[in-house]
Image 1: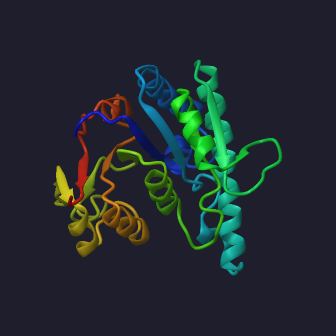
Image 2: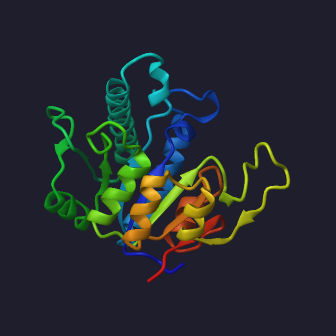
Amino acid sequence: MDKARRVFLKLSGEALAGPAGRGFDESVVRGVAEQVKPSLEEGIQIGIVIGGGNFWRGRSGGAMDRAKADQIGMLATVMNCIYVSEIFRSVGMETEIFTPFACGTMTKLFSKDEADRAMKEGKAVFFAGGTGHPYFSTDTTVALYAIEMEADVILLAKAVDGVYDSDPKTNPAARKYDTVSIGEVIEKRLAVVDMTASIMCMENHMPMAVFGLGEKDGIRNAMKGTITGTTVTVDE
């Protein structure tokens, strides 16, 4: 994969929690920041979407109305972006956080023009709060914003180190793909992003790459175009 000019990085909330599985592991988040910083300094424009699973998932609501449960999940992603943004600042980066709904003075209301300006200024730009609507995941969020902001690629930093033909946690013989087409991802329902996000990426020719967040220099290498996980290609 060639080095991109503008990328969107999707981070798993659970992965940022580290071994504890809840809240934040500062050493993990600081490690992410230290990998992102050199890429920003080299002129790569970076948008970031973070899941909220270290605090809340839609299914956490039990008998709760799905829309209300999803709203709590949106706020979890805002908390994550505020925290990660501050860690980024502590290592010397400038940041901005955008949300699709007003959060007082904590974030800025999303505008493509404003987000584009912030990215061109060399800031790490966080897109928090999901799409602002229930029933849409942060997978869909990153696909939506990456397409709208005309990114070159979506980088998915996950707990697993790539795309497999079956769950490697339950199947020791699971085969890892080096490269797979978005059509095959959809046809075989491979666990890359959810179906809505997959179809959006297919229709808008948005490539993706999946790699392990715990991999040494994984984010840094992916920013430079070196993917040791799986590259998801799209038809031109």
